[in-house]
Length: 55
Image 1 (tube, rainbow, N blue to C red):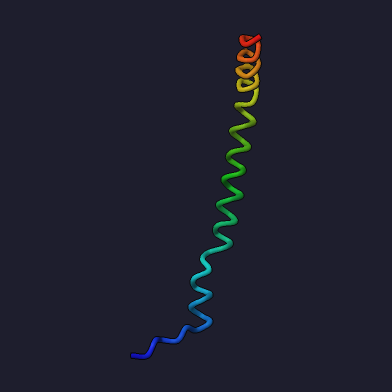
Image 2: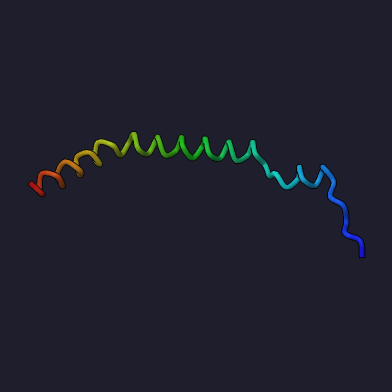
């Protein structure tokens, strides 16, 4: 039984949706940065309080 030959088209289809993954990555980083910006003051306060309690 002969094996089917692979064509260049099949290899391209297996690459996936690269521009889509780039967009998802950029959006995820953007959301993370927005959350960090809002939470940073509280997180810094929590860290400083924890460090003060250790001393």
